[in-house]
Amino acid sequence: QMQLVESGGGLVEAGGSLRLSCVASGPPISNYCMGWFRQAPGKEREVVATITSTSGTESYRNSVKGRFTISRDNAKNTVYLQMKTLKPEDTAVYYCAASARVITVDPGEYDYWGQGTQVTVSS
Image 1 (tube, rainbow, N blue to C red):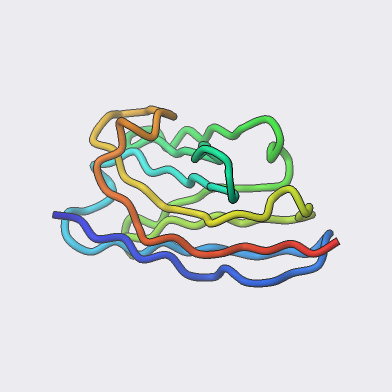
Image 2: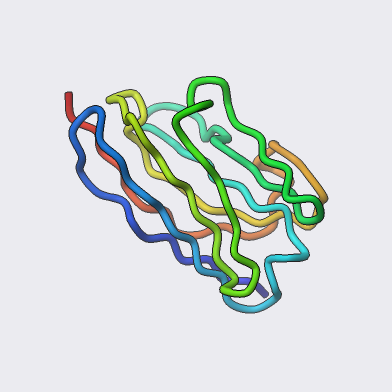
């Protein structure tokens, strides 16, 4: 059983940066596709970025390309999301998740979830 704990959220002005961390306990994340998702009030959960378990290939939703970077440190069992040039529309609860699949952007195919961390971007 894997447990995921996110941290690094907070309140930031538009144009600012934050780095989210997700520390995993239990199975090594090297065996999992890791993803960051977000959910704003009244909206469905959406994928932000994923990184594969094997090649470390990254993928991003279009609205964050060039601004966000996902990375993983398998030795620390930790996944990161570096967010730059933040916009008010990035405001949401951000979740870290792990999938036993090699790669997927479908939240339904993720097996483990963290509790989320709030990111608020003021205009």
